[in-house]
Amino acid sequence: MEKVQGYRMCVWLQAELDKISLDKVRKKAPGPAMLHHKEIFSYQSRQQAIVAPLAVLNLSCLSWRFGVETNNIIGWYGVPQTCKSYVGHYMLGTQYRDDSRLVVYEAIAYAESLKLVGDGKDVWVFDIDETTLSNLPYYVDNGLG
Image (cartoon, rainbow, N blue to C red; front, top):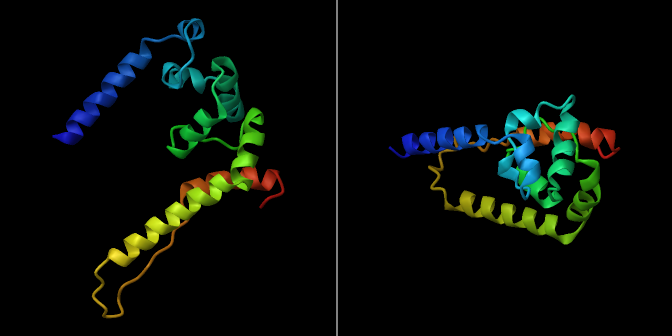
């Protein structure tokens, strides 16, 4: 039942987004949910698909980061030019280390909570996720890979 309600909510949200045109969005206070996905990806390149809406809607780099982290910005190949300083400060500052430390602690707590049989057949599989793969061109282009 919960999946059905979630699906209906997504259908309703998409219908609401379909009602909004780019002209109406520009006349209102900008907000990330107000730009239809078809309008975002109508730009000529994927890089423009990220940079142009940020400029048009005056979205913050924090909003862009949140969109990437929640996998709501799909197919991005690099950080928008206006956000490179923001990302640099995040990655080289204390917040990135704090965020990473929290994830490590949660992973350790999860691993320690498992009840393993102890027959030598338990296996840990470490996988490279799509985020790492999609960031690769950015790191290569910037000499970090």
